[in-house]
View (cartoon, helix red, strand yellow):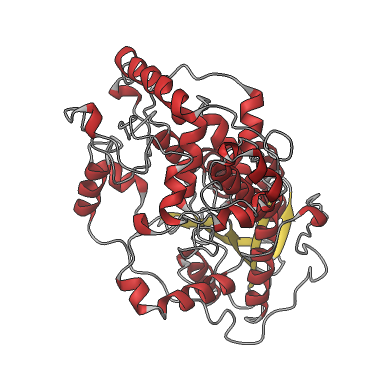
Length: 487
């Protein structure tokens, strides 16, 4: 926690004193030390008014790609938070516009005594917070901020590693082990005012946003499978925690990327510069659109991208498969293009995790076993040999026999006609020949690794994303490196 001590430079207003808690990513009452600090401040300010605020940041909307499902998840989450706050005698105030401008207004008009918030690590947010921090300092207003979005304060982990970001997962684990246990979680806020809450001077203002306001066409939204909000997150968590056998035997790599119902918890949306090899990726808008829209001609890949667009979530191994296909596996398109699509469509999109995962899976950084290529045919068969996942998300292929469902272009014309889906007419032919192109791309990756050195350490950025498969086993004979689900 960091703190500015008020200097008393601003003139004291006769208006009711206000304590602001600024909700950003942590839209929850549980484990929210910044909200707790705001509530505790009320004890020292008789008749003070708590204003829990959320700023619908117009600059952020212009900067980030946000799809319809993500907007719906946010609207859900804000509505749930508002309901929880109302049960405590307060509510959520939703401001619209540039946060700096909104705080200028608040500091001028609300007689603010304290601002609390949870820190954010994304570049835009860090710059924004510095500006707000300076505004408060100039107004003589106390500010308290807390690290609770991540288990550890990032700067602490960097200091454990001589101010360098760890470049492998094993090194990351070593750094974390030296940092000790993360801070214990905080209990939920259950009381705001010890007496009757003060009168709300703006009871008809700062209402919750609607999908219409956000220009979301509700008729185009997919099924509402994953409602947003702390209440729903806790319900899902409680439900999972009752499955003791599932929990005790859980191994994420052994879960299914193409199960009809999610094989993991789908809690990733709720928690709420990197060293990169310079690879000469192709620019191919046609390939990129076909991948993003689920028109590659590979049913496993297309089913995954269809689920992502409709529902806003896909299993982590499904993310691996489509990321590899877009980049080093088949289409040879930059990971940055895939990152933008995921940023728009994923409910759990996070700038750093998204970028880090894409660099990892494209073998541009951290992960160097580029010869491990996910097969768009074989990989899905491992967990769903009958193709039920494909039949769900690509119903035009539903009548194909299991032995052709992953490779419908190999089916005889008689089978295609019986299934009511002619390849090349009703469903696209494969956009590339995986059996050939992945070998070409392996050679391109090999050449890129030999030609392009990693950037020097002086350019090492602040944060990194790692995974467990980080060791470059280049000493292993090439032919022995493949697994059954690869290539």
